[in-house]
Length: 442
Image (tube, rainbow, N blue to C red; front, side, top):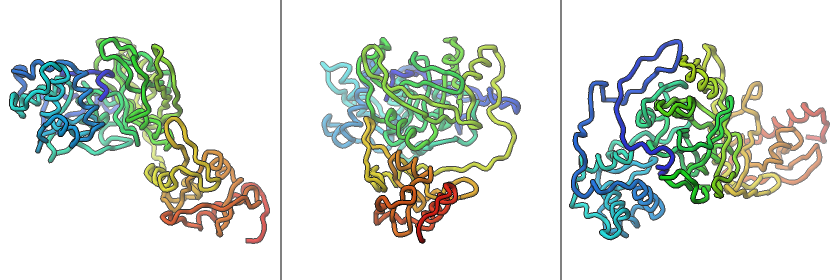
């Protein structure tokens, strides 16, 4: 949990405004089952010992320990009983709610140790205590939405949310605190807020700083950021070309601190990443670009909001045929070969882990219309991928790899990889036609 990025401790329900057909600036999301006239019954504050739990860092450190140890080891270490039905949800992870509060209390008050769960109720009192830290109490039999990449139904670019809770309920950004909603194998969304002054918008580009390493009170970096969790997930998105949803606080766009709404900008691709230095510590810096037709241009949104104008719509009324890639296919072929090139046997290892690329044999677009399936994809290093797409490398039906018409090796094919050699024959024929080469007998 990255509470340093945008600590939202008090969450309010808000009324919903209709959507103007000409713009997307006043579209609001309404949580199911709650009308705009209803209010949560949260009267009063937590009483007793839980009222003495006030330190967000105690919660975040406890969450980190739970994640690192695992549930069974965490409960055993502190002699806590597991929850049966109700859990705290943090970044998509379920944590036993009462043990979380009990152990966090002991972190804040080490002279007293973990709090006995008999000293506080597991219902409304636990819910109120968790909500002070922006954490939702959920039932295990009504688990929240699954991990979802790409577009969210009924939430087009330009949808405005009153707060992070509304964006969470809509499925746009599935965390109420962290700036990154994702795991090491992929990130679904990011949120730009006031907390990170290094975040920058230039036209349709966003420069985004990773999470971690900052002091929650001063905002200064006190440690190196790490290639883990959502930070690593953004790099996985970069490798796969998988888009990420971008949510931004209005004050980031306008510079006015009183602008507290959140605007969904749409889908962006991670075009690059690297290391930078802040306060003498290493930080991760990402470059993201708006996906044409599926996003708003951030600089135009900022200009419109600053002038008090409506935000221009992101889309025109046209019909297009769009290839929808299954990014799981590329990930599967990489796992199958442990990121080792099937042609040259090279296995590249970067600071973010091994790197390889999924190369479609028969291209997906018109006029080739190749399938986005495992039988039509190879695991290649960047060099071989470029040579393969550039028609220098081809593969014969017997598995012989040809470089500009001359044998150069054999294609490695795992038993579990049911490769369709008809696609390889098609690629070879198309490459010969594209280059004008004449090869030997078939």
